[in-house]
Image (tube, rainbow, N blue to C red; front, side, top):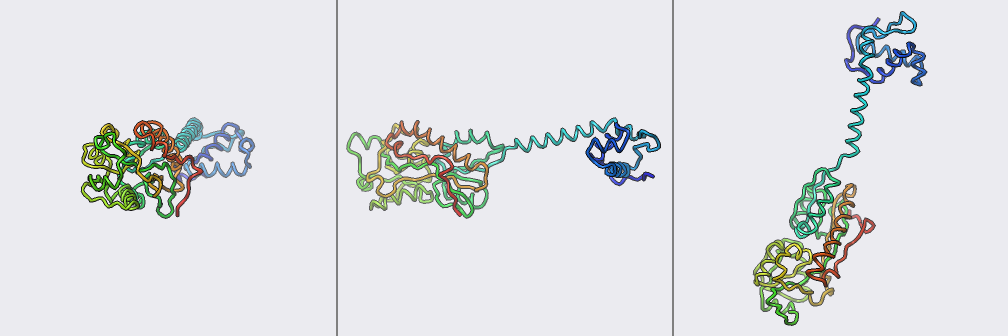
Length: 334
């Protein structure tokens, strides 16, 4: 006798499938044959389904088997119940297949202002949500190490433990002086500039500032400290206004291209003797599915940047810039 108190008010989908087969065939044996099961398995499933609902569904007193009024109601609504479950499963599956990941990306200022817009446009096709921070390399490295960012593009070459480092683009350092200072004369030497004109420095807090100081030290130049800024937003207009000279890079020049007509852009004397170049790297988690995709897009856009505005502003620098290609060039730092 079927219990009147249900153990589980929810309908078991597998039990429902078996019940529908029994109701349609009028036989547990035929239902079992249709479903590829044993008659015993179907009989036990029917008993569990009736017990869980607390009511009889089959009229076992007649042959072929009939259904009770409760069974008739279940028969009428059962197909739609199963169809709704299948639709829900398909919806969930499609959502899982098409779900785009979120990413938190850090970009050094000069890269954010030049390659950044086109890079983010490409990444939006692959990431549902993108959070982008820009800043100087030390700050970005700190945010990466403390897991506030997933990956960064910066001039740092050492990845935190367990992270991956892949080179994107290498660019030479260049000399910029006010256009009126160049004035058609021979290219000024760094030593002469340091003795006669203020150096507009990148702050020692920035990685580019540290590299520029290393270039001066390698040449034995000790320029007095007077003007010092964290980024190109201030360095380039200061030089354009005639307040001094600076050491910068092609991407930084593109960042401040509005000041280009007021600048003379020149190679550094002794170029290549002390590694006067910087390389921007992508650093992030090795397993991040967007890591190589981000690097490939950054490389492609950097290539376009070199062939476009860099070549227009400083052809000699464009020839010396190197894009590091596809994922085969990547490496891991642990």
